[in-house]
Image (cartoon, rainbow, N blue to C red; front, side, top):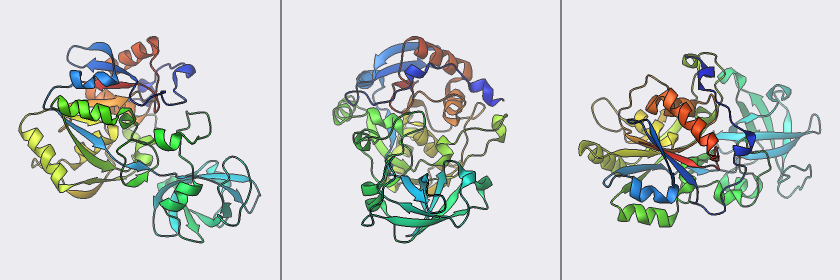
Length: 354
């Protein structure tokens, strides 16, 4: 199957550059797989659309301010890194723009400089960078001169907005590019399906007899790295870490055994559920890792419905929902969404695939 089979035309003006004025006020396309029908609703209508007794599974990972700007001591030019994962107190794995221009041993000075090159010794940190022998040299290692934690990043880092948002991050993004239930730091991109949910909506879902639980998958390269292979079967997913609490696993198993529907909120919840479920009929408890790549032909074991945003062309996320609902139905639905002026991607509108 070709990567190009998952392409579609999207006018640039439909790529949402900002969140809606109010959280939860987005449009919702309801996609019915069995009848191949579409319905245009609003996210706030979910309690009247979802079947009572359904178990909704959310990803509560928190986005860290993982985007760092600095200055290369070798060239004096601005550099930009995205921290992926902490190795120890002073060592982080990262990716960088213009990777080939970064030589092993280069020292960089980091500061709260944003898009301007200024320095302030009071908040400076420096790091030497090294190329990894693995991952086709896509990942760098940054070794800092002092411990770098989320407290430091909250003060001096930047929210890592996706590259299709063509602007610098703003103060409002620190709150709006984060779900209201975000817990443990660890993601470099938001589980964006959850951005639509408010306390009022959770209350309405509960009143409608809909159960909600929270799991964790820290979003990394496995979720957002582009598919560069011509054939999708040749694409390798990067590993991501997830955590499934004992009590939550028990509640999901109970819902499944009772024949109640399991609705995954976001593709990261889908990947966690499908990865943690074992052939013996139970979910792996505790911490795990997954590099699962779901594309057409995959047989779903757990998930009955998906709530998600609209995804980028030729992405693993688009391939996942195509595996769930059929490639032609998904692409037809996306064409309808374009025709109807839906807003796409992270800050855009949503769809419920039933």
